[in-house]
Amino acid sequence: MSDDKNLSHIITFEEGWGKQIKPGAVDVLEEILDNGFNKEGKFFSNKSYIEVYTKCYDMCTQRAPYNHSRELYQKHGEIIRIYLQTKVLPAIQEKGIQGGKPLLVELQFRWNNHTIMNKWYAKFFTYLDRFYVKHHSLPSLIQAGLTSFKDNIYQQIKVGAKDAILKLIDQERDGEIIDKTLIKNTVELYEQMGMGGLDTYIEDLESKLLESTREYYAKKREEWITTDSTPEYLIKAEKVLKEESNRVKEYLNTATESKLLKVVEEEILEKVEPALLEKEGSGCKVLLANDKSEDLQRLFRLFSRLDNGLPPMASIVQEFISSMGHEILNQRQARLDSGEKDSNDDPQFVKALLALHEKYLGVITTDFSGHSEFHKALKDAFDDFVNKDIGNYTNAEFLSTFCDRVLKSGGEKLSEAEVEDNLEKVVQIFSYL
Image 1: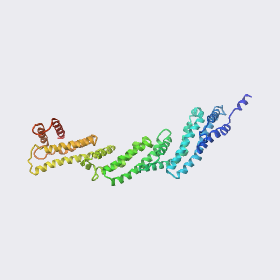
Image 2: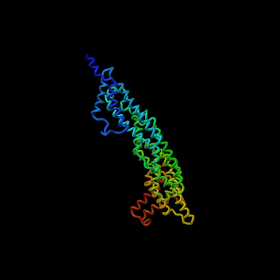
Image 3: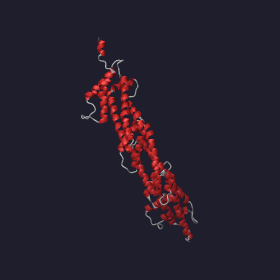
Image 4: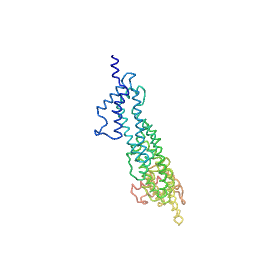
């Protein structure tokens, strides 16, 4: 009699699932996700939630063979899979025909719905997670729901979604206004599909973005290098590098930034560095000759981003300073050739050397941030010409005589500070001899 009484309280799977859980939770949730909230404006009342939760609990705590934990876990996976295959995938594929933004909007809508569904099912079947899932080392309900979305939806639409994202990014690069929040949310979906890692995001989106970026800026490079002067080109280059950095901050994974910027730097800087530095009418030597400090600073900033971007630039700076030094030597030779008497006292010659050194030491300090590559360029340039003597006297003799003039009261009319300044400059030139 006691056994009969106990059996009368047993909940069969068909009864618990078919009469309460499915109509009271599954059907209601799917209806809301498909058609929106009812007039009450919420998913479940406390009473209806507790009723379903209690039924699941009772079905999971009955003694074998009436414990329905395994069947409920399987049913959980089944209802999600069927809903995804019959409702979600067709809706996304329909929008996929249009491509672009409509596809991403629908995907985002369905992903948000799936997140809601996943959380509610995890709440209804909480007891499964606490005991059955742990005891059998199974994926949690949330994890199982994510995996189902990945298998049934993501794998089918990832290429179309990727194409839509890349198209929108190119549109923004071309100056159009795009829905950045939509891209950010879709990028987060790619991240979620990695199940805790970034491998899926990197393989399915980031790698394709880098390829697309390389193609985009290869075209821009060819356009700009043909039509723009070096300063104009570099202004554009600096602008797009900042934009790409901001792009990552706004809607891409932060781990993408260094890789994305490297691609851009390779395409718009590294591959045209010689052409930009030597461009007729606006290259590095022209900028130096015309004291274009702002342009030189930009040149330095951009090429310092490259692993080997500064040596070619420093080489040109060295050649330029060396040519200026040889011009000073040529001017002294021209004066001698015109009949000027040779003498070891030539303040005009020494002052020209001092002025040249002071000017380009200033350029290196201010425009090139005192970088050692350019200090070496200055040294090598002066080593090249300052050790070439013109006339019967050595440059060392000219410098010594100039020092005597500075120190003697009747030679150069200078203040004490000016005397010290001139002597210091002479010592700098002496260091190259």
